[in-house]
Amino acid sequence: MGFLLHNTDNLNLKGLEATLQSEGPHVTMLVDRLPLSSLPATRCATNNRRFVTTGPLAIRGGYNTFRFGIDDAASSGSVIEFVLTITDNRGEAWSLPVEFMME
Image (tube, one colour):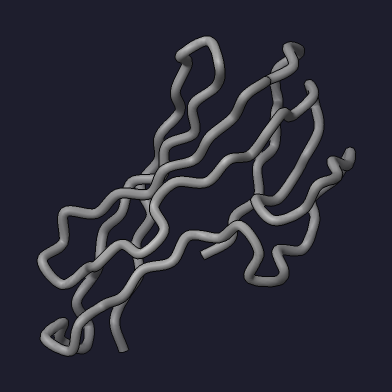
């Protein structure tokens, strides 16, 4: 799973790390922690690119991405819930829910 970050603050963020967690009974996390380095104020970056920009980027590729498995017991139409948390080197953290619906 890839994602886009946008630092809307006027402070640079350093030492960023992302974690993805789920307490779903059908989820097996394979890669749940990603190093993200730094994100200057007002800039955008994806989890799998080294460079930052002033505007949103396309999320592409499989480099530095979360990986998880969903077992066959998850029924069609069920919602799998995750929490994405970004932390910086000062201990600040930002979290948001992420959901996937099984087809």
